[in-house]
Structure formats: C-alpha cells, structure tokens
Amino acid sequence: MSRTPVLLAWSGGKDAAWTLHLLRQRDDVDVVGLLTTVTREYDRVSMQGIRRSVLHAQARATGLPLLEAMIPAQCSNTDYEHAMADAIARARDRWPGLRTMAFGDLFLEDIRAWRVANLARVGWDVVTPLFGRDTASLAREMIDGGLRAQLCCVDTQQLDAGFAGRDFDPALLGELPAHVDACGENGEFHTCVSAGPMFDAPLILAQGDTEPRDGRFAFTDYGLTSAT
Image (cartoon, rainbow, N blue to C red; front, side):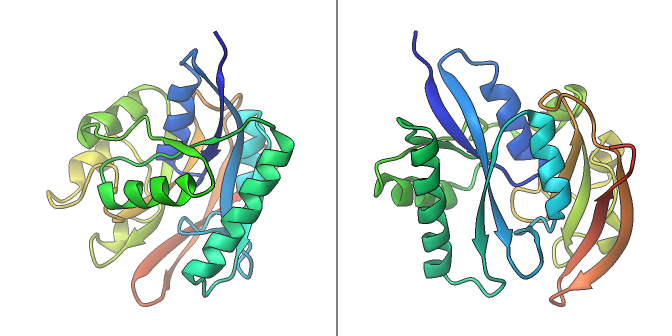
C-alpha cells in the first residue's frame, strides 16, 4: 500500500511532537518533513518563543528536514499567508506529490476550519490526528509515553506566571486550576519538548530566565547545553 507524504506543522511543543509520534505508527502516511513559523526579529519560534538553535536540535532529533517560514514580529494575515505560500511552494518542489499537512490541533474547531479552508485553496489536505481527544487523558498519555516538555510560555491572564518554567508532568497537571485545559489548548500555556519517542535522543536544555512580555505573557528561555 502506498503511503501519503505528510508535512507536519512543528511548533516545538508537545502537541506537534505527539502528533509526529502517532503518525509514525500509521502505515498509510509518511511524515517527510517539518514546517515551523519563525519570527525574524527574535530568531525564535512564533508563539512558543523557542530559540532557533533549540528548534534545529529538535528537528535533528526527529531525523526530519526542517522548513522555516519567516514572518515579521508585527505580522499581518497577509504577511503570514505569503510566508506560508512560499514555504508550501518550497515543500512541493522538494517532495513532488506532497499535498497534505498535519497539525496538532485538539478541539478548537474554528482554527482547524481556517487551516482546512486556507490549504484547500492551494489543493492541500489537512490531517489532525489528535483532534477531538479528551485533553486530560491525552496529557497523561503523553507523559506516560515518555514525552518530556517544559512550560516555555504562560498567558498570565489565564494562568499564574509561577507555572512558567515548570515541567509538564503529573504534578503540574494536578495543580492546574479547573478552568485551565490540561493541554493548554486555549492558549493558557505553551511547551518546549526535550525528549520523547519521536526523538532519537533527548535534548539536554538549560533553563534560563523568565521574563514578562507584552504585559501579558511570561516566557522562560531554554538553551542548548554542551551535552546536547
């Protein structure tokens, strides 16, 4: 049976990483590469704020090539669409026949519908293997399955800044307020993955400072150590 080539939207966080793990267990798809949106001025992954050097180390650990879509810090919808169109064109040149992108979306139907509509305009399909899963059980499945991640960004309007920099582990899940999703799908927090079954070796990351940004977010910096 032929396998459908898939490009995975890679944020550097747990949902994208677990999506890769699940897709690799299927015999109908073949993840051929990763695509990440990077903010040009910060040299970091958009939203997560993960350093580009860590992003590249993650990609090496997956054994997959990485495509980067560069966007400005003050990014309009037009800027984003142009960056994605360029990245998709490069992907199609590299992998003829590639027409499918995977995302780690969990339950936000409007975001998923937006992705489907935008990619349909260029003839691409979307797969979201985590969509509709119970996020509390999914979070524990990830941890029990060997995924290791740290909270690199916290929206302090939804979650106390003290959670920034903490491990994504059972202790954290037990302390999250009832209104906070276990996977942070409402934007309560974002993670940086350092280990898991999708990596051929763990990343040894050094935790840096936690700083406030935009009067709302608490970002914890992570860098590579010489052991990585």
